[in-house]
Length: 29
Image (tube, rainbow, N blue to C red):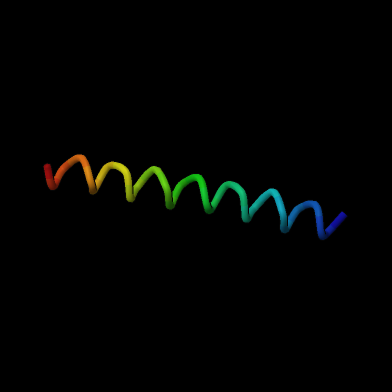
């Protein structure tokens, strides 16, 4: 159970990081 929670949290964190990086790249153009 704890492992599943950790994996889900990691996926959400990666998704947010990718989204923020994508927004920053668009802003630079």
